[in-house]
Image (cartoon, rainbow, N blue to C red; front, side, top):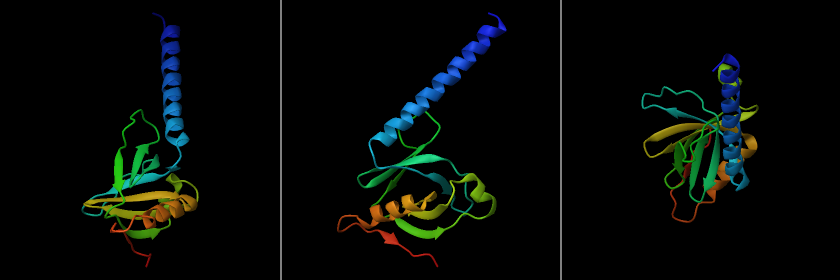
Length: 147
């Protein structure tokens, strides 16, 4: 096999991967209830992990978060509305703003022992807070206003 065939195979595989990721994204978005949303996990000692670009998809009382670039159909993170605590809301600061969507707002939520930050547009953030507040009676949802 010469270099030309090898290069053609690499280009074909890259194209196929791009098509598969595009179809996956289209499948997530076409059903509605999906929003572009970056996520980062906060460790127990408060050290934040890296921001990861993804798609949040509302499914009843849970928000499924999927990485934007990947092949998995299962969510990487599941955030349950029941017992969810919103503990902080802020704007991106410094270098953090460069890696996020323009005009993104950041909200810190706690689902049991898992603490994450979600970065999304102001419209998506409004939708997220409306989803929280629309919980059925008896759902303990806490939203703490920013200080």
